[in-house]
Length: 223
Image (cartoon, rainbow, N blue to C red):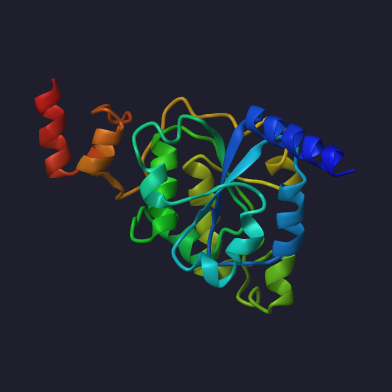
């Protein structure tokens, strides 16, 4: 019996390594977390790599999520070529603060900086808006939808979609076909490509990207 369990474990590990990899970005929200984590854990479409951002550990237990796959860090995933083996980026708990930051082109939090990096690399990004949509059933139950569509948060979602972040259902997120990669990655408004980000891209900035002074000087020196 034990030998059978060992064989099954080895087979599952081999199959997991053969599947495409998806980076799961955990943020500071946890609506429907048990259902979403269970669906991700039993998904056979891809193998998750987990990234905790900022205060995410206050909402998500690392002991639970490490069962889905290896845990990485922003420093590790920001290394040159680290995203090459990632097929898609999933944000199952996109929160109001991160949505607002990304929509306005700010790069203050770990989550916003990583999303910016993923966009520059051309990775498909898929997010669930249960936690950040003021009109979602979850936020209606929480009493957060009283302001209706006049709430500032209502403007964030179209801006995210315009940046190529696909707001989708959980079934769509777990499907075999990820979101189409945009041919041109346009940086968010006010978001500048820094020198370190430009070096990670081997000096090739995305079309239309705004560069900081140091990055611009470095780019000129590469020509």
